[in-house]
Amino acid sequence: METYTPKERLARALTGQTVDRMPAVSFTQTATVEQMDACGSSWPEANEDAQKMATLAEAGHTLVGFEAVRVPFDITAEAEFFGCTIKAGTKEQQPSVVGHIVKDMSDIEKLKEYDIDQGRIAVVCSAIKILADKYGKELPIMGSMLGPFSLAQHMNGDEWFMAIMTDEAFGHALMELTTDFNIAYAKKMAQNGADTMVIIDPTASAELIGDEFYEKFVVPAHKKIVDAMREEGVTTVLHICGDTTSGLNLMESSGVDAISVDQSVDFVTAVGKVNKAVIVGNLDPVNVLWNKTPEVVKEASKKVLDTNSGILAPGCGIVSKTPTKNLQAMVEMAKGHTY
Amino acid sequence: MEESEIISGLTNAVVNGKKDQAVELAQKALDEGVDPYKAVIDGLAKGMEIMGDKYDKKQAFMPHLLMASNAMYGGMDVLTPHLKLESGERRAVLVIGSAEGDVHDIGKNLVKTMMSAVGFEAIDLGKDVPINSFTEAAVEHKADVISVSTLMTSTMDNMEKIVKSFTEKGIRDKVKIIVGGAPITPDYAAEIGADTSKPDAMEAAHWAKEIVKELPKDRWN
Ligand SMILES: [Zn+2]
Image (tube, rainbow over all chains, first blue to last red; front, side, top):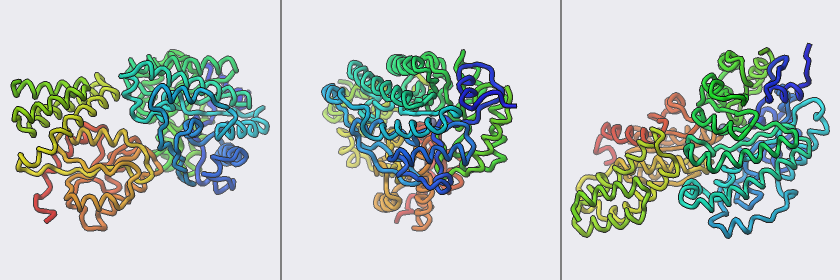
């Protein structure tokens, strides 16, 4: 007999409490073309319209079997909110940020006044409300957002990697802007019913910028977001791409409940590196989930399950062309695992 | 100023990410009659190699690498116009770009930097490059190495199409093709008919420098 609702189970698993079995969820984006065709709601429209977004998110639960619903599917709404130019997405491809808007301090000043109820981030909040009204009692409602460091990079361009070295005051000022925004946005998602917050900060990696810059610019920002979420009773998951092995301790020092690691990390090593944080991941979205068979997915899942720790999940965003049967194989493996 | 002082000064300027210093010393190299080729290879490029090495050993990171890259290009802008005139041998040509659909170019830029550091003349097509632009540029510039990168899984198909376009044009054997980016593995490179994929920009550059020796000199005639 199942003791917990999926909502309780995930909340318990993310906070280190005992559970009857592993939750079957994806902390990264869930939408695929097969789901779009089946539910009648597709990218790019589903990125712009709250009802369509909710419908496609719901398909991850009803068609694939994920024990959660999660929005949005991309990580560009935040930069778009501040005025960065976006290259539109297609049915198979997410939109991307192409134009940068912050060059100096005066640009930051101009962006400090904003209305959080505007733009596509408001669409995301509405989609959360729709999903929470329908599933909020039973399923985890996951919100996700681009993290403050990567948002700063979107706003400033690749110059950002040099700015944190050459102009510390500017670096801190931009991080303050993005962090305050992240907190306001995350709170809004929480008020609309999100109970789990995934912070996706792909370029905020100690592998890329080194421990010193990570500790100085990233940790305090993540900590503020995590603290704000804890006040709202929302659990936090931090996803950073690449080989984050050596940075796990610093990532954990922000206080996040869970750390999502990608396929370049050795899951066992990661589990051994953290104190309390739950490690989630790390099936390769390309070379396992997209391009291989359910049998291969199950084999790869076993490696994660053998650690008897953490939560099995995709290592990064699911590729839109991923076959449903591969995702279902992962779901089945997670559901079958008792700790 | 001694020649050796200028050369080591150029190396240090790159290592320390000092663009102004690199530009100033590059000009000095010209003024004092230092062979510009030597100033680039033994001076600037050596600095970039040192930084690439430090990056591999996790002693330097993206900020340092980008600063160094800026300094190297600063010096190169001064020296390159004098390069072809004074050294007889043709430099190997790299055609580089991000696959169509991919708007990222930080990884691509690093590969370009390291390839320049090992002596390639880089033809940079930028990001989100239309598929056929690669073959067009290869023919026009008599390319040796083609480098295609993507960070986005949704554009991996375009990477395959780019490799195919070389076969279709009958020029696949005239170039070596390297593909790269977060989702790209050596297996995938082999599968789509590329020559290789390397885990980082340094290794890519070292591979490229060696592999061009296999290409017949007269193949574009
Ligand atoms: Zn990722």
